[in-house]
Image (cartoon, rainbow, N blue to C red; front, side):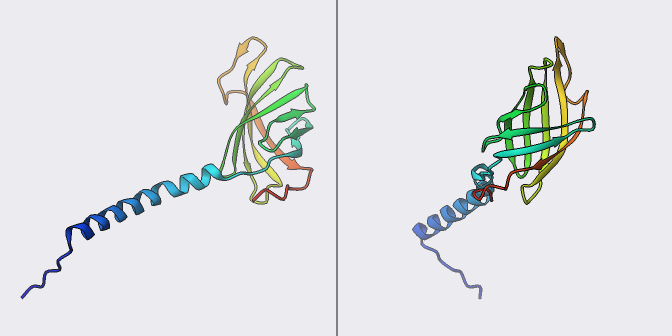
Length: 145
C-alpha cells in the first residue's frame, strides 16, 4: 500500500513561499554584490601607448586629468575588473573612449582606446585607436578590495 504524506495547507504555502524567495535570492544576489563592489581607482597612473607615455591623476571613482594635451578621463562603468570610460583632449580637440581590464591586485591594466571625434570629424567607435597599458604609480589604497 502506498503511503501519502499530508502537509497542512498553511505549511505548504510557506514552503512554496520559501522556495520562491530562495530562487529570487539566487538570481539577484550576484547582481547586488557586483553593484556594491567598490574599487578605489585613485592615484597616479602611468599610461603607455605605442608612441608615448603620460601620467593620469585620478580620484576614487576613476575621474581626473592626464598630462598629454590637457587630457581628462571620465569613468563610465567599472564591474568585474572591466573599466570603461571616455577621454577628452582640449589641447588637440580630440575625444574618445577606452576599455581596460584591471589586474586582480589593482596595480596595472591593459586594454584599448579609440577616437569618437577628431576636430569636426565624427569617428565610429573602434575604427581608429590602439592598445595601451596602465601602471599604478601610487600604492593601492587600503580600501580597495
